[in-house]
Length: 303
Image 1 (cartoon, one colour):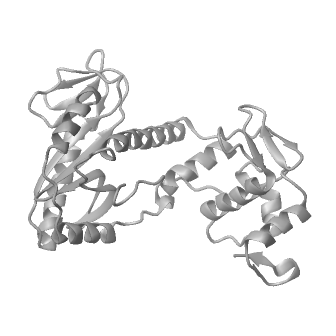
Image 2 (cartoon, helix red, strand yellow):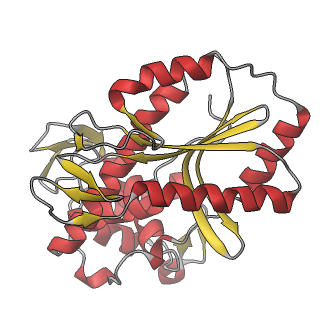
Image 3 (cartoon, one colour):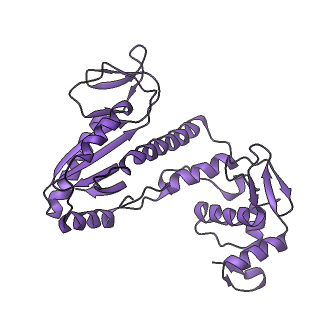
């Protein structure tokens, strides 16, 4: 069990809702795709770290500040005296390494941001943070290429790169490390979790308005808007997923709170957002069962 679990970011959740309710540009679609793909790769790496029998402290997805600079660490493993930092990449397709740079392949194609440079920056800032906190640990870092369909031609032999095929051996090595954690280790883990910053998702998403978003329920599985009402259930015409109307309405409330945190939740608002998922009276009953009402008549809203 990780000491700090990985959860889906609000950024991914918001992009997912927007993708189902409006037409994204090609650049926005690409950005959303890479966010989803990156998160999937990190979750895949978690399947390895969570099986470690040596039981290090696992801190996933830390966003910290060091010397007025932000550093995001995909995965952190804390052993006595040594901390391992991991930058997880879910790259797919052919790449080539030349003169310290990464390019798409074949040919010397598009240059991409160098994950090894990212790792060096993370390690440098993390060491500074430890020093400022008064801790001394060895810090090691690795770039994990988690996708099986990622060949890197001319792969450097002296860089901290681990491919998917090498992960079982690497995890076996970590399993053999002594891991009698101390109170100091625990105290540092607590401080790192306390220093973790919650990033506002709205700084990374283009502006949007309520009026421009498509209304109506969406499938909780495939996010299609093609749904049929069958009694008290909604059935997806695309994937066949079934969901209670009440559950779909509550999910709609969650979407509204995420997209528009300053907007008051009213019966009219939710009924409009979940158009076709039930009557206005039914929507009001659902809200009354699950939320506290403030105000009366047209001034009533739910909290």
